[in-house]
Length: 522
Image 1 (cartoon, helix red, strand yellow):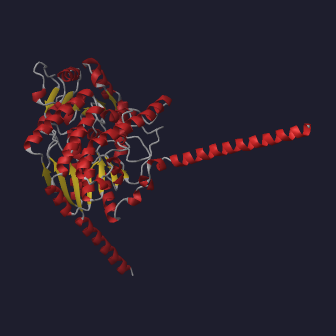
Image 2: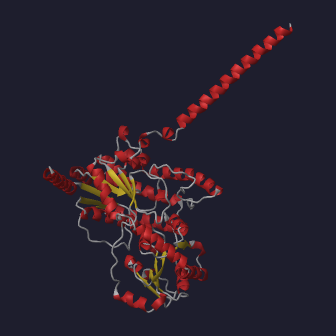
Image 3: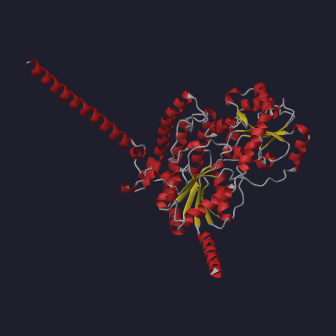
């Protein structure tokens, strides 16, 4: 019996291995910057764990400074026609610069999604690529939660899909119940510890955010009308709820705790890689500052392109007041000719950020507050000073401040003297380093790595035929049923009807009593 059972277990194991090797997954990477990097990493993790991965890659949205890496999976590139591609990139660069300059103005984000809606329409019209994807018969699609076109691709292919949100949770709600008393709404810049006025603000921001989301989704209305038959047009805002799983590239070492559904999985730290020795020229530069150590300054691929002369000048003057060395990502071509580089500063087009954050001499990380950068800093227990520009960055820095890992500095207020004082405070006050190391301990003490969680859950839904058992029935209910409005209306009607009936009965009793008294007097 024992021998039979062991053979059965071996048989099941081999069946599972064959199944996993045979599973075909299509990943989609059409957004640039950190979104592109996360999807690259996810694709490679799945390929390394036995899946047959194909990545559909839109080579239209390209952000300079993002390094291409060698991959072992199949890549399908698609482009706009050359004349359209140049026009698209010019328009996108103008909008990205406007986004950085105006600090997350909603109307700029709407314009970007309108541009993406037009790009999506072009892609869905590429019958050659769509036919190829249909013929490949993928078992699963996996794409960025914010890439709205990918939902329409999944609808066209009629395939199950999984999403990855490359930022912290508040940016989308995933249909989750969000108690507004302690779950801050995106854009509110609140923590989970709100006073009365904070809860008032959060309540009002919920409606504001809902309207803004609806406006963003509406930018794809024309694309849906063009590429879907009238009787089968999807409601784009409903499609995210169809995801079998939703992975969040965040961690509770950084984010606020909140209610989750079983199909919502935190995998913060997907970009983690073993630290390697840094180049000798950087080691030589760092060693010049001895025990003082060094400060790493990296403001992300988009912001690096749009740093103003005034910002560079003030930051350079602030760094000159520090005893530490400073490694700073600024392209030579963007450095103002009339600004003299501080003697303790070294500027570079690109730095090995993860390797530098792991260096024992690092004292501080000056960041724009992007999620990948924050996760890397927490992984190595490095305090931060954040200069948030746009998108999720301000919300990220609210969480960093709430966890006491660092401080946030408003772009408009940066002056050399006060900025230098802020940098010195975070470097010298050991409470920030202690909080950073505490966050590191939380982040590193999970029983499974982010990659193991990702692969394990993908295994689960493929072997179980999908994630329907992980999603509440509420996803299929109309909004008024989900929020018990029908029940509230029924109870209100019942209460009013009862009060009306009591009034009538009381009136009848009073009239009877009145008649009886008159007869008695008579």
